[in-house]
Image (cartoon, rainbow, N blue to C red; front, side, top):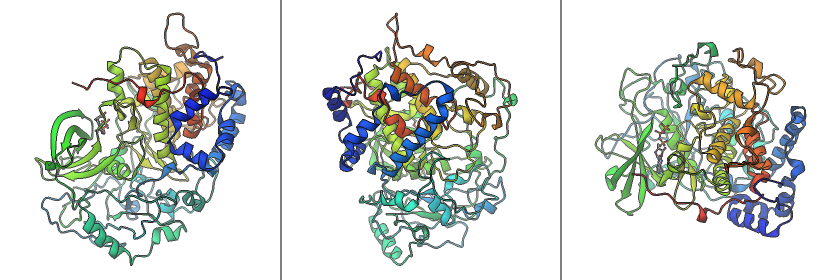
Length: 623
Ligand SMILES: Nc1ncnc2c1ncn2[C@@H]1O[C@H](COP(=O)(O)OP(=O)(O)OP(=O)(O)O)[C@@H](O)[C@H]1O
């Protein structure tokens, strides 16, 4: 019997109804209903007590293979919820691979300083001038199709995010078959199948500003003559609106990075707080501060920020200052994120930060209730060239709420929040996006019980076969052991670790692993989950930082922190709840739950059921 009450998930019709009520309207259930397999799926997916994962590591391989089967099943009938508004901008970086490392790159687009800029927008051809950016709007807004990694590979184009760790220097255009699942190293399937399942939705238009209509129409008419080269090459459906931005000699690689740092080199004062540092930017954003003359601009037609009335500053992050503002036209309250330009010409990065470009690019293409909605991009302000993202406004972020809350969230509230987080993440992972910075301050909340993922500055599209990426992502407290140990090949499992840390924090109201520096972070993790070995984590010993001597701690002590019973009235966690948490916090990323598995976990089906958003607590506005 679960500590939270009697497990009625298999017998109680009422409970099932409640659960269905909560889930009603989600694309997942619509999908299940449409596919006529609702009952079957629920029955097969709802874990019984037998389904609970055995803790004995000897059973892990079997469990892992079951997980793969489950993933296969889920993937074959991929729900339709993963539609994107359009595929994000893809930077053509063919030449980048050859570019000398450490060469600085220039701003990706020119910010307009006057209404009519000298814009060179051409269709599907590379510009010869290195300062020009080509924008291609593909002619067929017929299907919503995520940019698939293999598609980029087949077309010989690399996504902007691929420019990490100098891995492209030697790289050939890969023709490897695409993976079927989001997690790397798992089954393979055809890209056509994947895309066919997504091709039935009417696309939304690109939303680079609101005044683009006429220009867009112009572009579209030009684009009518353009062969659908990228999609044709990979024999897949055409994208709805594809912006291909070619830019010569930008995004140069830094061959170094910090990936080779050994654990022994880390000192206690190296990273004194939990805020992340990221060499990602060294790798991605080392841009030559070249002249911006003659460049094209993707913000043409964008509204001016003067059309918004700034009400107050909400927060300031590394990459932006976020304001609450009112749209003078619609009177709608919005959040304006002012992109911080890099102004020191002698810095590695200068001009418009690529992290922000990446964030705008991905967020504009996403369309899901658990992902913050970016409405448009506006320009102007005190400094003519300032760029702002206009987002829907949510009153709180989870960090602020937890800091001010006296009591932890109840189990049913945690379930409500976790489901929303997982649904948003499911959307991202099925669209080949890793967030790479999930943490409470990047989860927005409003007073209608909604949770939305924000801050996509570290997010990236990923592909198969997985390439080496920087491991210096994810705020330290939420960073998984494989990244701390220096793994450069990773995928969606890194987000799932962060989800585990967030779940623990929601339950206990305090961070699970508040490391002071990377070494301390690893020690804190291993002190609770046990020191990894080849037996529990095959491949562990070959990770760059695994040679370090960690204090030996052979046991998993997580249950002590989240007991099934409490004599002092503290928060308790049922067997199933613990199984979910423990499986999210698997040291071996291959054994960590996928987002589908987490969404289908039995904990969400047992009482107390997830609270309806309508009954979630509200919080007073921040002062
Ligand atoms: N749409 C929004 N509505 C309300 N508040 C928001 C919104 N977007 C962001 N915020 C607030 O601003 C903070 C910083 O935003 P964001 O994380 O996007 O900026 P950042 O500069 O990328 O931050 P970081 O330093 O974490 O990378 C968030 O933690 C949140 O409190």
